[in-house]
Structures are given as C-alpha cells and as structure tokens.
Image (cartoon, rainbow, N blue to C red; front, side, top):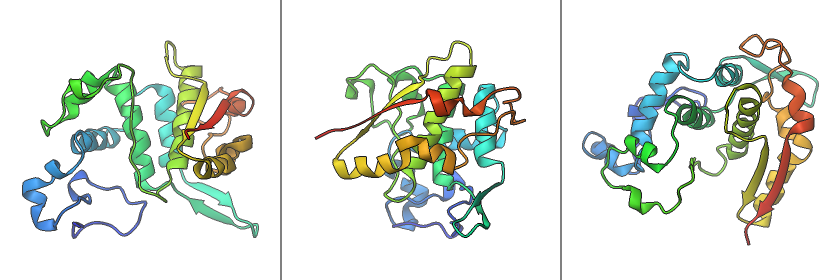
Length: 231
C-alpha cells in the first residue's frame, strides 16, 4: 500500500490531497492515483482544501462559526485527575464534516446529478443510483471517530435549521446502526446527549465567531433522537 514520503505522523496534521494514502504501490501514484480512489473523492478533496484555505468563503454564517469553533479554536478539556488537556479533532474527522458542509452550503447539491460533477473517473453515471433523495456518504475506518463526526454533523444541522432562514435541514434525528453491538456503543455516547457536552461540540453562549447573542445550549432541551438498528 502506498504512503507518500511526506505523509505526516500526526493524525491532526492537515493533509494535502496529493499526498494521501491509496490502495496501490507508491510507483503508481502518478499514473493511477485517481483511478484507484472511489469516484468523486479526489476532486472533492481538492475543492474542500481550496475552500478551507479561503476561510470557508460562501458558507452560511452559522456553518462558518461552527467550523471555526471546532477546528480553529484551542480546546482544553478536564481530565479525570483534575488537570486540563488539549483536545483536537483528527483531520479525517474535520475533512468529513467540511465536505458535507461544503456540498450543502457552497455547492448547494440537491441530487445525484449535482454530486456527479465531482466525478473525474468516468466510472459512474446517474442510472446507477435509484434513489432520488439527497444522500451524503462518509467512509471512515474503524477507530477513526465516526461517532464524533456524527455529533458534529447533527449539531450543524440543528443550528443551521435554527438560525439560517430557509434552511431545509432537520432538528430531529434518526440514527440507524447495523447491529446491537454498534447500537450499544452509540448509546454510550448519545444517551443524555453526553457527547455534545463532553466534547467541544457546542460553542459557549455568545461565542464571537458568529454566534453573538445566540443561545448555544438550546440543543440540550430540544434535540430529539431516535436510535434504531437494522436486523
């Protein structure tokens, strides 16, 4: 498997799309890199990088405020011994959240035809997808923090609906898991909205990144979850 010579060791390092891992020998990077990645991935990574470098230009004010709080603000969280430790989301988690917000807020994707604009492989076409509803899929390996990504995306949806005029996102959520084991793990984090308060998901009330005068803790009493699993 290929690993670029400049690939960083820290999971927090911001990665350039051109030095990412791909499932082949490093010698094939120049000739086959995009062909060996899932369609849409490489082109979307490049677009999101440019957008990130430009300060999330074009996104809703709510989205920009949350992105800056999560990824551009230092977070110190209490440890069990009473000391404080720095908390930082992994770049894989950051990029996953950024990609969803970029597609929704900036590109304003409405259907599969809009998404296929990012395909440079020529391997996919609209008739491969039966559903007509909008679907964003984030693929992440075990242990990379999918639950944390879900918490950020749900908080973004909630505040976007609450504060952005004409937002068609939701304030109620259904989480579906493939089995009881995963359901139990999810419940550990989501019961009582635990993850939203143990992680720095919610900005403080009056956060100056765009939430001035807004109550960020309304989520505690108003977010409704239904946890389900498929047999």
